[in-house]
Image 1 (cartoon, rainbow, N blue to C red):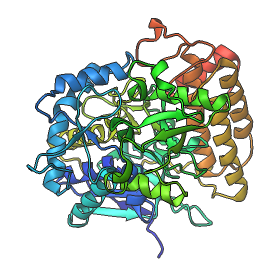
Image 2: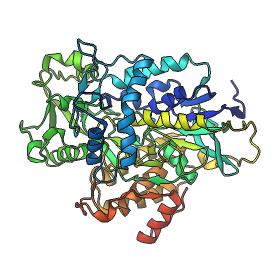
Image 3: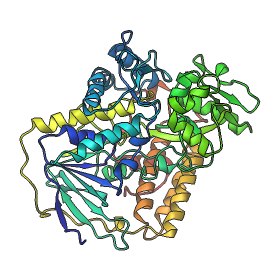
Image 4: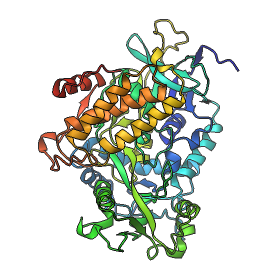
Length: 534
């Protein structure tokens, strides 16, 4: 079917069909909303449906939003926006109740109370689960059922947003393409407001727990449009991806360590007890680096769940059990091989307390946003609840404003950048693989000034090649943003570790905010690398 040149998306266009996107859409009644899902099966394309751990909310009688806030601040290593973290801690219980109202069957005890689990760096049991480790999948299935029942929500599949468009300085839609076609003809999609909910950047690294679509497209679009960004150096590596050579890597949820599973090396030694007072329940960045340290000296690392979970594995953690058994590992009786994997990006597009970005008409929530909630290191199970809290706040803010005059023509909107209209090729796939290798070796779990400058030089050479496919163009843009911020942050903190500067420096105890143009100018001045923000 021939697609029209211009699509009227209604009052709000939501980019992304993970939890952040569809929860926002559901909260926007009675607005007319279009969700640009991208893939033909959106609910399987985002990270939300893969989430195993659950959602953090102070629901227990011995817990409180104040304690949740305190744990979030501690995990964030001095960079958390306390006001934002307080909003999330206070509103998280209501967002869980929203999910209950939608029909999400959270795990309950015999008295009907929601069961609360424990995860790393939480001082109380406050993690709500579904079927042990199936929270993401069941929540997404439930919300998609609600979306399909809503006549006011139109889900547009098969198109991929490539750039934000503005009229009179205000974001009013996107150019999109069918990137499965040989000819990437742009389609202009217009709306009153645009919500960016495109997810993270995990696929920029060789080993990730994220789906293949997590290439940072939304961050790249916002950067090119001049949106303010922050804290892009901070990438969280999950300590316990199942190390069986798969891409993406299956995840062994944090909840296993919360239940008492232990990390051992090939000699059967528990190494985390000497590394941190909380041992296996230390913050993720510390656990991940200790595992990498073991691997770097030739040791294999395993997560031993045989005593903590044992025979109950199939019922309590069915997703992990299935992943292990498909790889020939029976976690009931043998330890699971694990390694760190890129998991979550704490940085992203700066928003205010209601999800408004620095660009008029553009909002952001979920992993693409940098609300200030996570600081340098996200507290386990705070991501899904943050997405819902800000989805609800964006919706409330949009609903409170006077209705905008509908934009139905492309008058005053420039053409789509031709650099974004190159289809993917075999050569493009080779370059994608090369970018992932560079990011892993030079900008990964451990960084140095030398490795970061080397990465930026390699990205410069790649950018100089002709006719870069869309994936490569976006990935280089995001890779540069991460690497430059990491080079400029001359310290180690949370998810950003510099082997050449291993100490935390209080001169950097603040969020680093910038535009893409600012960032490239600063790095050119500092190290002599010349590039133009693209």
